[in-house]
Image (cartoon, rainbow over the protein chains, first blue to last red):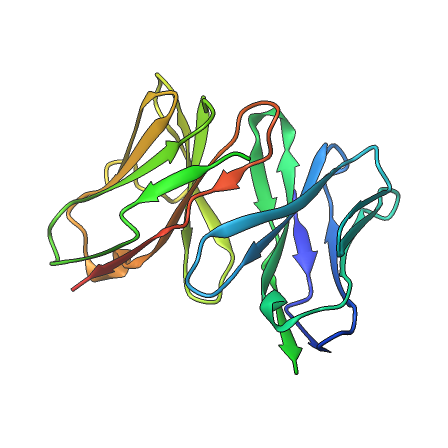
Length: 111
Length: 114
């Protein structure tokens, strides 16, 4: 079945770049997403990428997609303490818009 | 951008009562909304897909008589936790998106059953 995997924890120093990785199994996915969740809050859509794209850049965020390896990454440039949160990777499964979720990567930014 | 509003944000009630949570799409119409449950330090668990004008589709293991979903309009879906017990305490989140938008999420409802 469909599956999304991501590392559970990442720690970086303020000002460094963060790279959060995700692998997925459903080759028919058309959209892949990155969501951010701060403690006690809902989910915030950070960015998404169409499966026919290799890269998408939005200010400090860069998404890279390797469709052959089914690998998605999110790079946050100049990471700030406000970026500390859990980052979820998700893919859509078919046309019913149901999302398949990773377990989330907890990003800790140290001053 | 798309906005999804969820209400209430936090509710505490006694065991045995029923609790209704609302999910509204504020600036777009959503034929489909999704209800998730999230336990502490865990990922989201999809509970059900709410379909406007028809019955919800529940995921395996989710009791449809326990978690009643109504999607009576293109901008509102409700989740009612019936006869809630302490094990139903959790963070419930809804999402919505039309065909041209990715899913946007409400801020979640923290439910605490005493």
